[in-house]
Image (cartoon, rainbow, N blue to C red; front, side, top):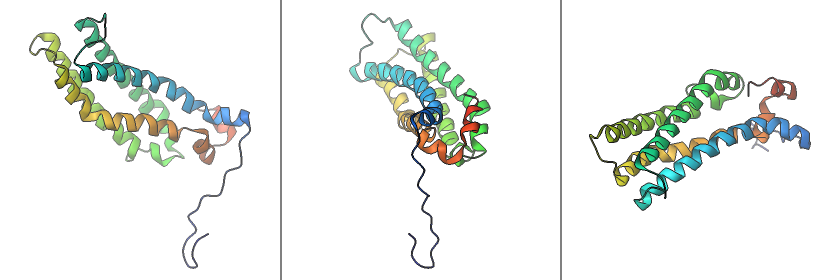
Length: 177
């Protein structure tokens, strides 16, 4: 309840969702989390190698670099799909998905880190530099916090608890994901 003379900025409490409605509203979050978990797993593998100074057992240098390159490629494709097909639909009703706001700003910051990572890996592949785990860790540290924040924030925005504030059940059925 607002103080007298002050606007009431509290959100009305949302009705409790049935299990079926929760699944429908949470579908995009689950789908997104599936992809994000893949990115998290690859990041953890790369970062663990950087932290320990050793590649995973039975992984050659060429395979390790290929894993890092696949991570970059998959994340860039993922962001491209989001920006072209998912975010514009969500931005109609959800401010967090509008161009000038947090989630797309995260994409720009992550992309800058991916460009630096790509350049480093290309130098290592060409023989211009030796792959040094501490250098790779520095590059990853330059965008790791924003990446992990973003992966979690995007899923939270797509959660059933949030989606039902903006979309009807019929609109959810028509979502592009």
